[in-house]
Length: 301
Image (cartoon, rainbow, N blue to C red; front, side):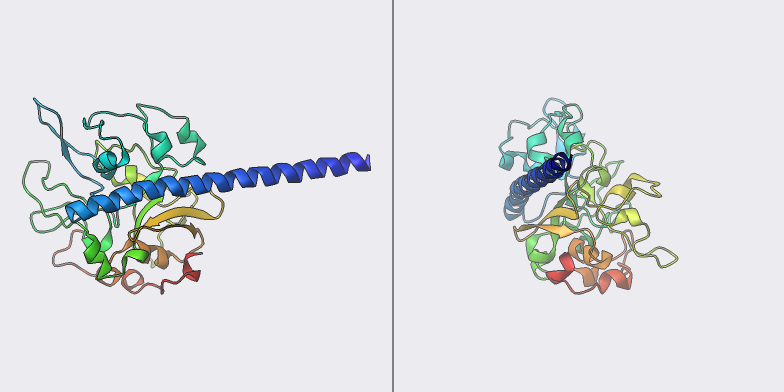
């Protein structure tokens, strides 16, 4: 009987080790594919002098030439070897490119679901853009709203973020470009919704809670969720954190226990200039955002 118990324990330990090794491989593959997408975004910025917008309208094929809301991923398809997807109405599943291998639920989905778990830094929740005020100030985000027309066709202000602006601010190595989110939607974006392919950050609430809800943190549990924006935060099936890719071209695993102020500092290209969306002249964000904790290697673990 003792021998049987010992064998059972050894088998359990072996299976645990095998599962751990498989998850490590999946996490590594996730970061590798995210790096490919991130490098495409950096290449896009070098050609266009600005990153693609989380909302980045495209013109559909003739004869209609209809204007379609779409997301940042569509702009990168030519650099990702999918220049054949030039029709913005196509909903092809790109799971091997845009879904983390550990996100098994999404890996099983195919078109028309066309999911993604790779999401962009959309900064603060956008306000309504006007002719003088962008939806979000670029000091708040990497991928801003680049729709230059409102619903009535009137021109609005856009404030695209570019690498030189970030480099003169918080620096490319400490500005988040991409991460992962289990609750993201489709890689295409016909509704111009930040929650489909972006993550956001939050200021303190009226009671001074920072962040306002636990769900807003990295891998935050879905408690007290009242809006899709609540789950527009980094999340993964990796134990202890998420993969992230930064504007200087490096990717790394970031621990879920980091200070929320550090997360805000990673999101803001120029944290000291972070401002409330919809204000003009810009009203500075709360001090927890404009004066974040110092960014160090230890602060990201």
